[in-house]
Amino acid sequence: MRLVVGYLAIPGGADAVALGVRLARSLGAELDLCLVLPQDRGIPAIVPEDVLAEQAQEWLADAMAEIPDDVVAHPHVSFSNSPADGLIREVRRLGAEALVVGGSGGGLVGNFSLGSVVNELLYSAPVPVAVAPKGTRLSTVPRVREVTCAIGERAGADALLDAALRAAKAADVPLRLVSLVALDPMYGSLRSDAEALRERAMAHAHHVLEEAKSYLPEGFSVTSTVVDGSTVEDAVSRLPWQDGDLLMVGSSRLAAPRRLFLGSTAAKMLRVLDVPMVVVPRSVDEENS
Image (cartoon, rainbow, N blue to C red; front, side, top):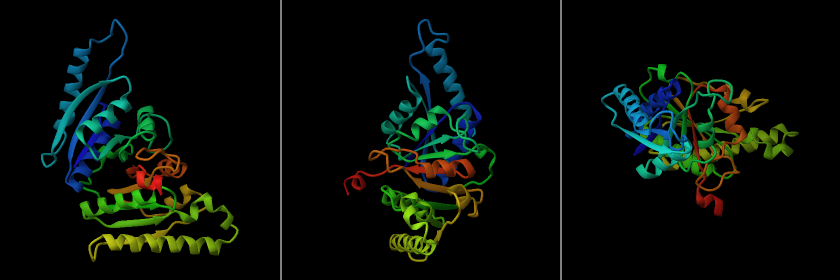
């Protein structure tokens, strides 16, 4: 398994590397640190391309020096008019299964203040994107502690559950399934009947738990719960979170197959949680179903 880390020589880049190291250790993966430089900078260029590439190599060398010996990593420099497109091209070229980026850079409030490149990736990437909250580089947690899968009933749920099951099994860590059915505005007609809504959510939680148990080895730690609250932010904030936790969510139903589109629920979670979040694209099979 290979994970591409979108790197810049800024704190957000260091956060991405730190999360990449944690995921690589947990999943037995190799890292590809990719720094994308601007290709079209006008003529005459303020900084010659070869000088910029040399500086990029130095930045990557500094980043590589911070990666522990037990993690295999490779540096890459490429050029593109669009940093997001450049990273996606590197993901495809290297056959990577996920992309890791740092969340700091301006945009959303809270621990994930997303920059334009990360925002673009969350609306276009063909592989799961893991976003490191601000300050991840300061954590001393070496591996993922637990995987939380926040799942509903919309298109993309099957791909999300499959990704969460594989991640938890590969990392050999507990899996916590969180049903979002009670928060889904699609079922607003049920909100006048709190008992009916709760029953639907409990049934969904039981269903995904049984599905998970059928995939995971006997005795594997997997739990299921329903979140309640007046808002998405309120509900997820009530859940216990610890350093080393990993939250996995699905792409919006608006996304094309094998593409991301950050939905409102995931965006709201980003605003209030300080754990790394992985956004998983929909599959072609779900589009055709």
